Amino acid sequence: MSAQTLTFIFTAITFSIYALIAVKTRAKSTKDFYVAGGGVHPVANAMATAADWMSAATFISLPGIFSFMGYDGAVYLLGGSGGFVLLAMLIAPYLRKFGKFTLPDFIGDRYYSTSARAIALICALFISFTYLAGQMRGIGVVFSRFLEININTGVIIGAAIVLVYAVIGGMKGITYTQVAQYCILIFAFMVPVIFLSIQLTNNPIPFLGLGSKMSGTETYLLDRLDGLNQELGFGEFTSMKSSVINLTAMALTMMIGTAGMPHVIVRFFTVPKVKDARTSVGYALIFIVILFISIPAIGAFSRTFLIENLQGLAYTDVPSWFKTWEEIGLISFQDINGDGIIEYSSNAGINELSIDKDIMFLASPEIANLPNWVIALVAAGGLAAALSTAAGLILVISAAISRDLYRNIINRTTEVKEKKELLLARFATIFAILVGIYFGINPPGFVMETIALSFGIAAASLFPVIFIGIFNKTMNREGAIAAMLTGLVFSLSYIIYFKFLDGSPDNYLFGISPQGAGLPGMVLSFIVMFVVSRFYSKAPKAIQDSVDKIRIP
Image: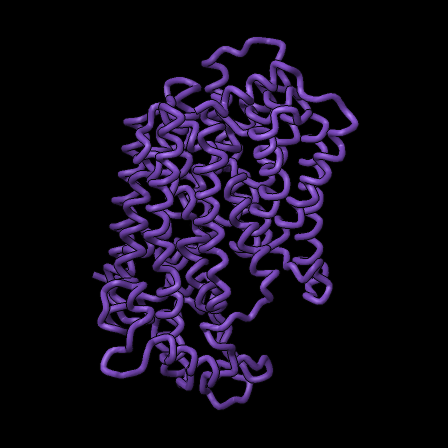
């Protein structure tokens, strides 16, 4: 069978599974809709968390970024996995013990302020909508390539699938759907990586293959890749190209941002006990590392295959996969010197090949001439990764609108009936999906640009007030509000200015790129929080007692 036919079959089967799970686990109460009834087993929740975290950016973009950045790409792996350590040790158990449904819920009650709740809501919406834009675009790219339809049509189809299990199932349906999606995406990721590792090094374990000799030679794979890069004028794959301070800032922004991500944190409200929250984070880290530890390998493998297959090749002889990706604009050839030969070089004046980083993993089975069923499997995995995170983000947006905005801010003087709130939550879900479609069709940038914005905002605005809210019982609402506003304004301003207005690295603050903006933003937020809090009274006694209570084992 052709790759396209197999992709249709695999996609239809997986989508049917998602819809069936949503119907079987549909939400019947607001507790089901917001936190899956609070009864999810920690291992199941860990798999759902891993699927929620390993988005289109991880599955599609991160291998490509590693292919082009080499050693420097490790900051994304260190930051992401390190963030879960922070969650396990400092955040998740305490928030679970506080007993709320959403992050703005916690901030509003902990800082005894409707204004603090409203600002936390705004931050959560900024984070979620920008993150969602990347996921919806990822869905469109996968559909466009493998089902040969327009990217915008792919975005709409993907949104319709999410609509089914998000509106019907709520968090309960999404949780168990994400368990299935984790199994699909991890299998879909590991199969081609193992194939490529065997082809290049005869070693079936990818991260060991990365340090092995190439098949039939005495040359190590990384030595070969370093040599290829140097011949083409690129820096060695294994060398560090960015400054230490910038790489550190990027890694810490990823780490701190992870510990402040609303759609990740809300997952730990779904388990029965406080102990389960910590256990769930531990298992989630294991499930994530299975994929993360293989990303450097697939980055190196795909770059090796790409250079050896395309450099010096006549354009008339390019394989069919090149033409297919070229048609949707994610790879292009410009014959600068008119000789019809592809020249791939670091020199912009003679480089004739333009490659979108997002295609590196999706195209790797075709580049390596793997079987059609592997190509179809990668498509199903890419969709599972994007859909799982999109569903989690949409639910966070829905809860923010129906619970935090309507019930706890607009209508807080009147008791809202559960059926009415559940209906409103479902309408809010539909609204969030429609906004997601818009941003998927008109994205603010490619996947990692939007992800960088999300992590920067989370690290600078939400993490400081969450952390201090747990470990400093006297912190008052004025300090928290000032910190969130400072972090939100600084992170948005820094990223927008240096990403879209002035891209010169020479003007970066302390040499820190926009991807690392969360670190200085967080430091500034902490300083503002403590300075402002000194001018106002400490938190009320009842609040201090509640903070003491959540810290008791």
